[in-house]
Image (tube, rainbow, N blue to C red):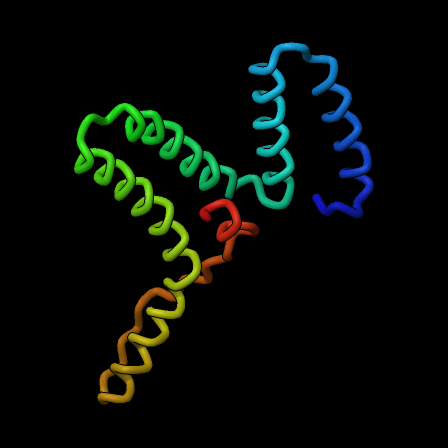
Length: 131
């Protein structure tokens, strides 16, 4: 869904109206979360699982970081969160690059590897929601 599309011109007022009809802050936040997933998934619903993974990991580890009594444990939770989020980002941004570089390097050395070529599509906004 693009900002200048008919779908968005319908989507925004509906979400806006529902938001103000809901009086409870928790319900408003849930509506915004669901609307965000719908908006993001409109382009390709399969990538909403990546956004959900990032959301679940950070929602699970954030409170644990806050409640951790030792600095080492807080850093461990932070490290896991960073590893998951940056790992997903790195895979989608750089997997094809490294596979192609591997093939070129071995071809230069006289070998002819034939790895499965992955046409990995970079999900829209992955860098934005990762950082």
